[in-house]
Image (cartoon, rainbow, N blue to C red):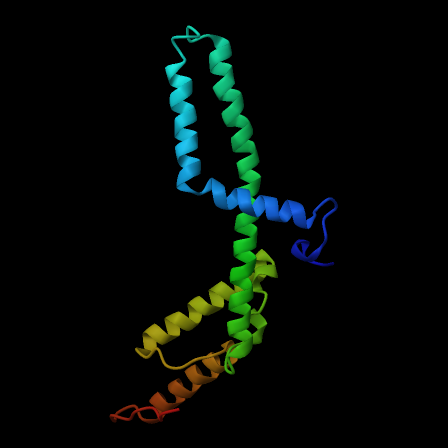
Amino acid sequence: MQPLSSVALAGTTPFFARFAARVTTWSGSTAAFCLALSTILAWAVTGPLFHYSETWQLVINTGTTIVTFLMVFLIQRAQNKDSLVLHLKLNELLASHKGASNRLINAQDFSEEEIHMLHNYFCLLAEKARRDHNLGRTHSIEEAEENHLKKRRHRRHHRGGQATLPAE
């Protein structure tokens, strides 16, 4: 099954994508804020003219509800795109780094159980580093475990002396 981001959705056109991107960009601008503020002020000023009627209140309630409803989807669309781009950049860094563990590429697609398992493992590695008082160079889960075992063996072997770990 393909991830949703790579599936062409029915009705999605380049026109809609461009339109949504422009509206998203514009809605975060100072001009958009000023327009919204002006609309609220104009509505408030017209209150006495319409005797603060239910219709007068309904106009602002309906308008803000519609705008809010549409903005939720535009914001979510922008957030999804930003999140995907961030994951792509992180995947590029992982894939290009010689010592990085490739198993973390596309970690955003892991199940919650897999994510919690990896989180717990990295917490264990952080605790081992804290106990060792050495943050050391560790690139992958396997290397981290191997480095930790080497450090423990080395310390046991040189318990009484001032031995230092060999430089890598």
